[in-house]
Image 1 (cartoon, rainbow, N blue to C red):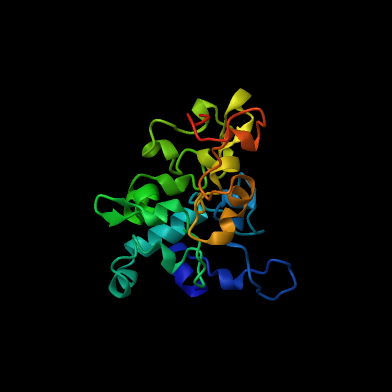
Image 2 (tube, rainbow, N blue to C red):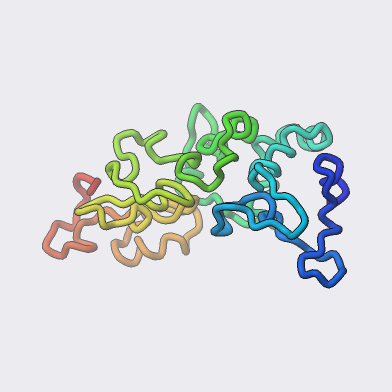
Length: 223
Protein backbone atom coordinates (compact mmCIF):
# COMPACT_ATOMS: atom_id res chain seq x y z
CA UNK A 1 0.00 0.00 0.00
CA UNK A 2 2.89 2.33 0.71
CA UNK A 3 4.18 1.84 -2.84
CA UNK A 4 0.72 2.45 -4.31
CA UNK A 5 0.51 5.65 -2.29
CA UNK A 6 3.90 6.70 -3.68
CA UNK A 7 2.64 6.45 -7.26
CA UNK A 8 0.33 9.41 -6.85
CA UNK A 9 1.92 11.36 -4.01
CA UNK A 10 5.61 10.51 -4.24
CA UNK A 11 5.53 9.48 -0.57
CA UNK A 12 6.00 5.82 0.31
CA UNK A 13 4.58 5.86 3.80
CA UNK A 14 6.05 2.44 4.59
CA UNK A 15 9.36 4.29 4.87
CA UNK A 16 8.14 6.75 7.50
CA UNK A 17 9.85 6.29 10.87
CA UNK A 18 7.29 7.64 13.38
CA UNK A 19 9.39 7.16 16.54
CA UNK A 20 12.79 7.98 15.05
CA UNK A 21 14.51 4.69 15.80
CA UNK A 22 15.57 4.13 12.20
CA UNK A 23 12.90 1.51 11.49
CA UNK A 24 9.75 2.16 9.47
CA UNK A 25 6.66 1.36 11.53
CA UNK A 26 2.86 1.57 11.19
CA UNK A 27 1.54 5.08 10.95
CA UNK A 28 -1.82 6.75 11.51
CA UNK A 29 -3.28 7.99 8.20
CA UNK A 30 -4.93 10.98 9.89
CA UNK A 31 -1.54 12.36 10.89
CA UNK A 32 -1.32 13.62 7.29
CA UNK A 33 -4.93 13.38 6.08
CA UNK A 34 -7.21 15.12 8.56
CA UNK A 35 -9.84 12.94 10.21
CA UNK A 36 -12.02 15.08 12.52
CA UNK A 37 -13.19 11.93 14.32
CA UNK A 38 -9.71 11.78 15.89
CA UNK A 39 -10.44 15.05 17.68
CA UNK A 40 -8.01 17.18 15.69
CA UNK A 41 -8.68 20.33 13.67
CA UNK A 42 -5.47 20.11 11.65
CA UNK A 43 -3.37 17.04 10.73
CA UNK A 44 -0.32 16.97 13.06
CA UNK A 45 1.91 15.38 10.40
CA UNK A 46 5.22 13.56 10.67
CA UNK A 47 8.58 15.33 10.83
CA UNK A 48 9.99 15.88 7.36
CA UNK A 49 6.77 15.05 5.51
CA UNK A 50 4.06 17.42 4.25
CA UNK A 51 0.45 17.16 5.31
CA UNK A 52 -2.35 16.89 2.77
CA UNK A 53 -5.15 19.32 2.00
CA UNK A 54 -7.45 16.32 1.48
CA UNK A 55 -9.19 14.61 4.39
CA UNK A 56 -8.77 10.90 5.09
CA UNK A 57 -12.44 10.30 4.18
CA UNK A 58 -12.02 12.11 0.89
CA UNK A 59 -8.90 10.31 -0.36
CA UNK A 60 -10.12 6.85 0.63
CA UNK A 61 -13.62 7.16 -0.78
CA UNK A 62 -12.60 9.06 -3.90
CA UNK A 63 -10.04 6.38 -4.75
CA UNK A 64 -12.63 3.62 -4.48
CA UNK A 65 -15.08 5.22 -6.90
CA UNK A 66 -12.48 6.53 -9.38
CA UNK A 67 -10.12 3.55 -9.61
CA UNK A 68 -10.67 1.45 -12.75
CA UNK A 69 -9.32 -1.61 -10.92
CA UNK A 70 -11.88 -1.25 -8.13
CA UNK A 71 -14.68 -0.75 -10.63
CA UNK A 72 -13.79 -4.05 -12.32
CA UNK A 73 -14.14 -6.22 -9.24
CA UNK A 74 -16.98 -4.20 -7.66
CA UNK A 75 -18.92 -2.08 -10.17
CA UNK A 76 -21.48 -1.23 -7.47
CA UNK A 77 -18.90 0.01 -4.97
CA UNK A 78 -20.62 3.41 -4.69
CA UNK A 79 -23.58 1.76 -2.95
CA UNK A 80 -21.89 -1.26 -1.36
CA UNK A 81 -21.27 0.53 1.93
CA UNK A 82 -21.17 -2.68 3.94
CA UNK A 83 -18.12 -3.89 2.02
CA UNK A 84 -16.13 -1.70 4.39
CA UNK A 85 -18.46 -0.19 6.98
CA UNK A 86 -18.04 -1.32 9.64
CA UNK A 87 -16.49 -4.57 8.42
CA UNK A 88 -16.29 -8.10 9.78
CA UNK A 89 -20.01 -8.75 9.37
CA UNK A 90 -21.01 -6.33 12.14
CA UNK A 91 -24.71 -5.46 11.96
CA UNK A 92 -24.32 -1.69 12.18
CA UNK A 93 -27.44 -0.55 10.32
CA UNK A 94 -30.26 -2.13 12.29
CA UNK A 95 -32.76 0.59 13.13
CA UNK A 96 -36.44 0.87 12.27
CA UNK A 97 -35.64 2.17 8.78
CA UNK A 98 -34.26 -1.25 7.88
CA UNK A 99 -37.84 -2.55 7.81
CA UNK A 100 -39.21 0.25 5.64
CA UNK A 101 -39.16 1.06 1.93
CA UNK A 102 -38.73 4.17 -0.19
CA UNK A 103 -39.50 4.41 -3.91
CA UNK A 104 -40.17 0.67 -3.99
CA UNK A 105 -36.93 -0.53 -2.37
CA UNK A 106 -35.71 -1.12 1.16
CA UNK A 107 -34.11 1.97 2.63
CA UNK A 108 -30.33 1.75 2.36
CA UNK A 109 -27.37 3.83 3.54
CA UNK A 110 -27.15 5.81 0.31
CA UNK A 111 -30.80 6.90 0.54
CA UNK A 112 -29.80 9.10 3.46
CA UNK A 113 -26.08 9.70 2.94
CA UNK A 114 -25.98 9.65 -0.86
CA UNK A 115 -23.84 7.20 -2.79
CA UNK A 116 -20.08 7.67 -3.02
CA UNK A 117 -20.21 9.30 -6.43
CA UNK A 118 -22.68 11.90 -5.14
CA UNK A 119 -20.70 12.52 -1.98
CA UNK A 120 -17.42 13.01 -3.84
CA UNK A 121 -18.96 15.21 -6.56
CA UNK A 122 -20.67 17.49 -4.03
CA UNK A 123 -17.56 17.85 -1.86
CA UNK A 124 -19.20 16.34 1.22
CA UNK A 125 -16.09 14.39 2.13
CA UNK A 126 -14.01 17.55 2.40
CA UNK A 127 -15.82 18.07 5.73
CA UNK A 128 -16.49 14.55 7.02
CA UNK A 129 -18.34 13.81 10.29
CA UNK A 130 -19.74 17.33 10.13
CA UNK A 131 -23.25 18.65 10.76
CA UNK A 132 -22.77 20.40 7.41
CA UNK A 133 -22.50 17.16 5.45
CA UNK A 134 -24.22 14.38 7.43
CA UNK A 135 -27.92 13.70 6.71
CA UNK A 136 -30.74 14.99 8.87
CA UNK A 137 -34.08 13.54 9.94
CA UNK A 138 -35.79 16.56 8.39
CA UNK A 139 -34.68 15.38 4.96
CA UNK A 140 -37.66 13.02 5.06
CA UNK A 141 -39.47 13.97 8.27
CA UNK A 142 -40.01 17.64 7.55
CA UNK A 143 -42.70 17.92 10.23
CA UNK A 144 -40.23 17.20 13.02
CA UNK A 145 -36.73 18.20 12.01
CA UNK A 146 -33.96 18.15 14.59
CA UNK A 147 -34.55 19.73 17.95
CA UNK A 148 -37.16 22.28 16.81
CA UNK A 149 -34.34 24.25 15.25
CA UNK A 150 -32.29 24.23 18.45
CA UNK A 151 -29.05 22.50 17.61
CA UNK A 152 -25.90 21.90 19.54
CA UNK A 153 -24.17 21.08 16.28
CA UNK A 154 -20.64 20.00 15.57
CA UNK A 155 -18.88 16.68 15.15
CA UNK A 156 -21.09 13.71 14.18
CA UNK A 157 -24.06 15.68 12.88
CA UNK A 158 -27.35 17.23 13.81
CA UNK A 159 -29.34 14.24 15.06
CA UNK A 160 -26.75 13.16 17.58
CA UNK A 161 -26.25 16.67 18.97
CA UNK A 162 -29.68 18.24 18.73
CA UNK A 163 -32.04 18.74 21.65
CA UNK A 164 -35.73 19.33 21.96
CA UNK A 165 -38.73 19.11 24.29
CA UNK A 166 -39.12 21.54 27.21
CA UNK A 167 -36.41 24.21 27.33
CA UNK A 168 -34.43 22.21 24.75
CA UNK A 169 -32.85 20.03 27.41
CA UNK A 170 -33.54 16.54 26.06
CA UNK A 171 -31.32 14.95 23.42
CA UNK A 172 -33.32 13.54 20.49
CA UNK A 173 -31.36 10.30 20.89
CA UNK A 174 -32.59 9.95 24.47
CA UNK A 175 -36.05 9.04 23.20
CA UNK A 176 -35.37 7.87 19.66
CA UNK A 177 -32.21 5.82 20.17
CA UNK A 178 -28.76 6.09 18.66
CA UNK A 179 -28.08 6.67 14.94
CA UNK A 180 -28.39 3.42 12.94
CA UNK A 181 -30.19 1.74 15.86
CA UNK A 182 -33.25 3.95 16.15
CA UNK A 183 -36.19 2.43 18.01
CA UNK A 184 -37.55 -0.07 17.32
CA UNK A 185 -34.28 -1.68 16.33
CA UNK A 186 -34.20 -5.03 14.56
CA UNK A 187 -31.82 -6.17 17.34
CA UNK A 188 -33.92 -6.86 20.42
CA UNK A 189 -31.34 -5.82 23.03
CA UNK A 190 -31.16 -2.33 21.49
CA UNK A 191 -34.77 -1.89 22.58
CA UNK A 192 -34.09 -2.64 26.24
CA UNK A 193 -34.61 0.96 27.37
CA UNK A 194 -38.03 1.66 25.82
CA UNK A 195 -39.22 -1.85 26.68
CA UNK A 196 -38.18 -1.42 30.31
CA UNK A 197 -39.66 2.00 30.88
CA UNK A 198 -42.80 1.86 28.72
CA UNK A 199 -43.31 -1.76 27.67
CA UNK A 200 -43.08 -0.88 23.96
CA UNK A 201 -40.06 -0.91 21.62
CA UNK A 202 -41.02 2.27 19.80
CA UNK A 203 -39.41 5.63 20.53
CA UNK A 204 -40.19 6.80 24.03
CA UNK A 205 -43.56 8.49 23.73
CA UNK A 206 -45.48 7.85 26.93
CA UNK A 207 -45.57 11.07 28.88
CA UNK A 208 -45.85 9.12 32.13
CA UNK A 209 -42.35 7.70 31.63
CA UNK A 210 -40.98 11.03 32.90
CA UNK A 211 -44.10 12.89 34.00
CA UNK A 212 -45.91 10.78 36.56
CA UNK A 213 -48.80 13.23 36.67
CA UNK A 214 -49.61 12.74 32.98
CA UNK A 215 -51.65 10.22 31.03
CA UNK A 216 -49.89 7.00 30.05
CA UNK A 217 -51.35 7.03 26.54
CA UNK A 218 -49.67 8.33 23.43
CA UNK A 219 -50.87 11.72 22.33
CA UNK A 220 -49.25 14.60 20.48
CA UNK A 221 -45.49 13.92 20.26
CA UNK A 222 -43.39 16.20 22.49
CA UNK A 223 -41.64 17.97 19.61
